[in-house]
Image (tube, rainbow, N blue to C red; front, side, top):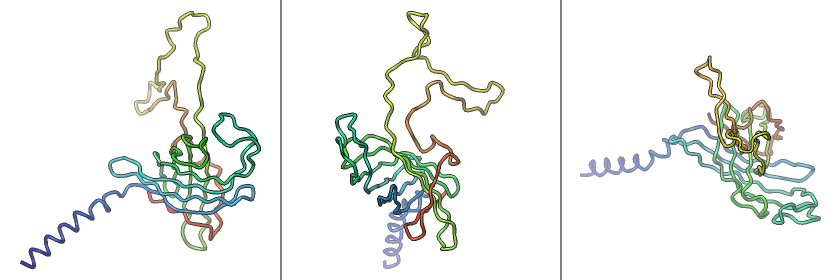
Length: 215
């Protein structure tokens, strides 16, 4: 009876533990402090691609940011704002991992600055090791608004241009593996919008935090 009970308990334990070991997709996590214009800032993040392809994660940013003396939409920081303490949380919906590098992006879901909510954010990092003798980790960070396209390209010599609204994919006819270029590429900034070589990353000083990337 005791053996049967122990086997049952072991089975329950393994079933309960299975999901923890099943989600072993690429991930990035960490937290660090840095400065911009002499102002202290901090970022904490974690993002992971689950085995089913879904993305889970968040990026939390806080610090003093210099805002321009304008309020273009009537919802954000007003005239003469100057230095403002900003807090925001990004719901990560995209992660791209290549070796020791990772890029994460998502929508700002919460912030003490209403004008920032709904904009997109991008964080790219490079994990260069844990030891004191290893090169410093690298990172770059940015916020991006959504462009409001209010015009449509059409043939001025035609009253009704039949090509307006059509979409197509330009490919190399001689290459079956060519994924093609869409006629209307997305303007949304995501984790795959830029190549890793295009990021201008800055060094994270030793002792100011840690970045971990797992392919």
